[in-house]
Amino acid sequence: MNTLTITFTYPKAASPKYTFRERVALKSNSKPQEWARGRITGLRLDDYSASIWNYTVVLDFPQGYCEELVEEDLVAEDELFNLQGD
Image (cartoon, rainbow, N blue to C red; front, side, top):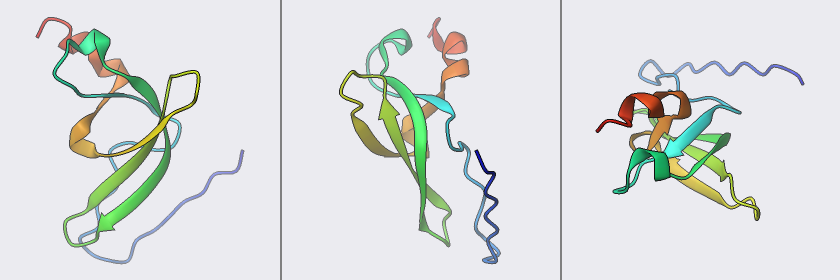
């Protein structure tokens, strides 16, 4: 697989928190161990001035369901262990 590097010239554009193929969980009101999980397959910078990133996540469902979410709705899968006690 080729590596693609994207450089932004806009001074306020921040790097995304998550990148392609990273494993994430979708935050919800249920217990963290019950949150849907998937991997990042797409990124979109929605607002350059506020650096609002949208992430396309393919969920771990047999149908390969896909959802687009903002950073606040996601947590890295490896951080879930730390949330189990909450």
